[in-house]
Image (tube, one colour):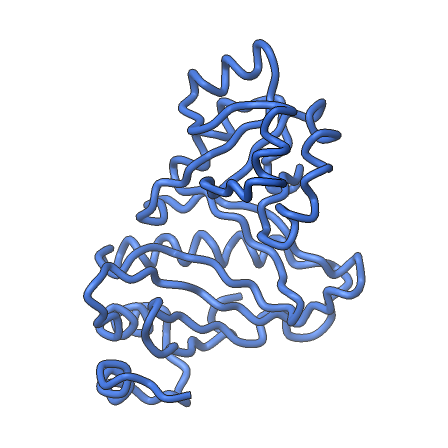
Length: 230
């Protein structure tokens, strides 16, 4: 893969093979974000889990203390009083069955997070093929299937992110923007790592955090020393 001039120049700032401490890595990643827009800083965490086993799955959510730098658009599936509550709490879109054809047939996906009350999961289930692959299906573990729609919306708007293993047992999540201070990024990153360490499945033996990398949207990644993050 051929990289652009800025990427190549940025990559000269550090040792690709070295493992850095958290503070040093965050400082480097900010310097590596050289695109013309405010790049997202992402964490890529490879775990010792084998996601093929149900008892080694990791899925959850955590509210980052300084948010993600992006305001999430929230769609809520709810009816009657719960629909009114969702509107009042600041949901961007609220609806029920009438949204199914809009999403299924018209390909409407102008939202980042889907919340549903438990009684609406039968309706939302019909959208599994569309929402599932995009990681948008509501899930009780992530706090997105709930009767407390107000709290769910407030948490998401405050910077709640969902983490889960992908097919290669890696967790990919944003921890903020390049414009954040080093302290803000460090707080967000530590909050995420604490949540993932806490979510460690008891069935996982040996080293849990195999590798941890931070990278800006368009730039190279910086490796951290995983032994210091447990």
